[in-house]
Amino acid sequence: MINKKILIKGLKYNLNLVKGFKGIKVFTISTTSKIEEYSYLNPVRYYENIAVFGIVLFTEDLINDVIKLIDGFVDYVFVDAEKKIPNSSYGDNQYKLEINDTRYTGNLSKFIQKLNLKSEVYEFKPNDITVNATWNFLSQKYGSLSGKKVSIIGLGNIGSKLALKLVECGASINVTRRNTLIGFEIVKGLNFIKPKNNISEITFHPRLIDAAKDAEIIIGSTNGIQVIDEKVLMCMKSNGKVIDLGKNNLTEAAIMYAQKNMIEVWRVDVSASLYGFLTESILFKDILKNDYGIKKFDDVNIISGGIYGGDGDIVVNSINNIKTIFGISDGKGKIKVNLNNRDLINIEKLSKIINGK
Image 1 (cartoon, rainbow, N blue to C red):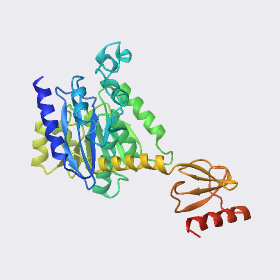
Image 2 (cartoon, rainbow, N blue to C red):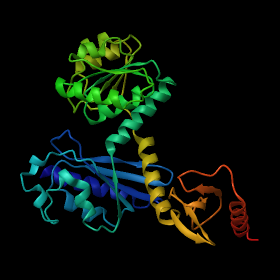
Image 3 (cartoon, one colour):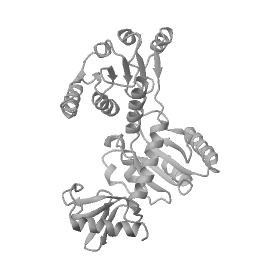
Image 4 (cartoon, rainbow, N blue to C red):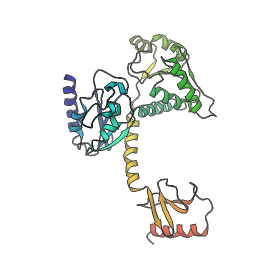
């Protein structure tokens, strides 16, 4: 209960920090599969036009207090869409709970969507943001990932997604997981999914040491388990780098060894990826509301937003604010290459309207 009081006090402090911010205010509510002793607050991040802060929840006794404080104060609430807490956490009655019962964590997004908040509620996937941030970090750090030898320790949600993303770039991926049977099956599936012309592969190793051997990059993605020790670091290349995604994946001895031998150890900063996702989501909602759709124009339609048109329909940037004509639909999901007289006449008519003639 002391933790709850401290968290609410901290949340009020963060609310006060962003009170005078003139841009968009965003609050995130998420969970992780790593069940920690206490829920905790995410720090306030300021971007040019967005202030974002949030909370990571592990218990059900905070949600009502949190909602009361943030609802209507922030413009948007982004809620973790990934189901990370097992059904057994709250017994067999999890799916029979009433909306005023706060034992929600297994289906956090679904629960909050039903509360009809004043703030707009969106879903988000923190794990995917972490994966994208890690990929961007490595891609920009090395320039090209093709041919790089990467070891991923921990093949759960994040580790699996990251393995696929990296192997698609031509990196050679060695992975390990405590449950070898599941590990082999995951790798089998990932290698099946990757582009068939990509000769790089993901290889499963039952032994962690074998997965780390000669690695240029070691990525720890277990749920806070200290699996990377000094013996693991001794196996990697001398100029290799280590990324701790799972928090606390390195032993104290490994950290000391890394410092002594000038091995870079990183925690990936998700700030840029988070900002990109938030702006994309907010913009996409506006586009869906104002730009997507279909309108009648003479004997054809004006379409936008990827809607399949009929033969001769005019494809534009926005049905409500036409500035650009992209072309004429062929009725099969593509833009026509060869236009007939009717197509040319319709484009000319619409062009005159756009230009105010």
